[in-house]
Image (tube, rainbow, N blue to C red):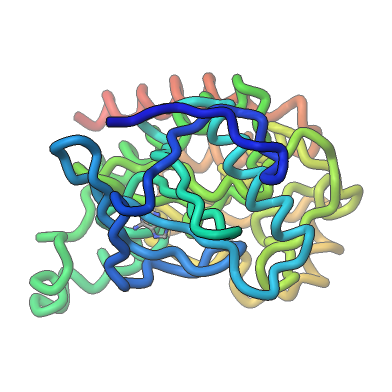
Length: 302
Ligand code: ADE
């Protein structure tokens, strides 16, 4: 069965987590994606009599000290915050030599961005519908439900004092029963620092105006990014500020420029996005309030 242990100081992690015996972990070879620190692989883990599917992250070769710090930091954060249905949860970690393999729950539908974009073609391409697990395009209710899922995950994280810093549809995974789960805590930290993503590129199109200009990250800058994520959901994976350069964003966002209302977007949902994109961080709604607002919209449509 499972057991907990205190990890030695070499791994810099002081929290307890389930140490997976190496022989109970079977890598399946399938690459699920590129994480911030290396590849993510699909695996099966023997847990008593049960077999659980998992996503395994390994620190890439040639990782910098900073990568390593972020990688361990993510494990550390996942240990500390504990499980939630709308967050990708930690299963455990496995030590192989001096390598650390981190196992998280497996999300069968992949990233929300992929789910949104592929739902566009489901209507027009029946072959594609067969190839994927999804039978039909996403309904308005399903889209709203996934927006609620993410808001709940973020409410939970923010209550734990966790700032995500890279909230976007690409960093949300879709699990069993199409439940959306916030993923990739690698960049989340307590301090306000300038953070770079995988390619050294900043997720400028998701960044709050104060993150762009002052490199300040708070739960309220996560709320801004959440507003962009709402826009991604309603446009089925559109590119925010499409046609605008990053330089233009740097110039125009502080001047008050915001994306306009997407064609199929109801007024109440657009109002919520605009609240998330308010200039002053404290004017933006907290995630708890976003949950309430979205639940009302969902009830009104049912
Ligand atoms: N990381 C990338 N793809 C994943 C998936 N399908 N499940 C869990 N983590 C992932």
